[in-house]
Image 1: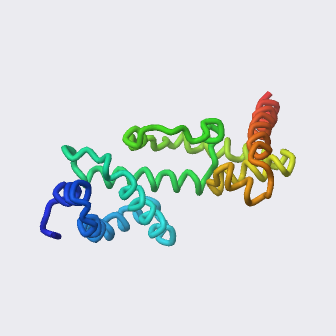
Image 2: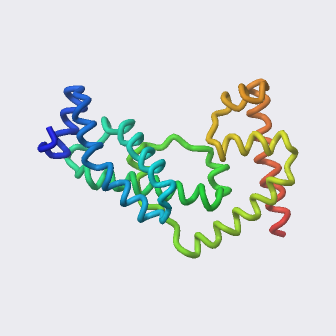
Amino acid sequence: MIKMTDEQLVTRYVEDKYEQALEDLVKRYLPIIYGFVRNYTGNQDNASDITQEVFVKVWRNIKRFERSKSFRTWIFTIAKNTAIDWLKKKNALPFSMIENEYSQEDFAGSLSDNSPSILEKLSLKETSKSLALALELLPADYNKVINLHISRDLSFREIAESLKEPLDTVKSRYRRGLFLLKKIILKKQK
């Protein structure tokens, strides 16, 4: 099966439900994607985690892969965007990410190249510093909910369960926390 093209393997996996086809794609691309991610992020320690995340995304979205396109380009785009996301999480928590609250976009739309310029990175660093300072000024209950939702990527239900609080209370604290956070940041900018 390894001799088949990428697109043939995708078709075999999607249409015939042949698991080995996906395994062959993973075997084919695992070392290449790992090397790419390691070089892109400059971080060997996290390259395997990022690579694993890339293959999870491929597995989740392979049925939506447009087979008239190049699989290699598609997987490298996913790898690049996953590495960029990791770099963003590592370096800063953009305020816009809190406001946007993970809108459910079409996966293909999320593959566009949104890598920030050097000026944007510097601005992002400044924004993340003011955001971190503003987060410290929030009441502990609001701060905890926002951090669990954004930093640990927990759903409101998971947060409610871990804090042993009602779901509506957690959602309310999140909204109020964002409102206060916005107020604090706007006040500091004046």
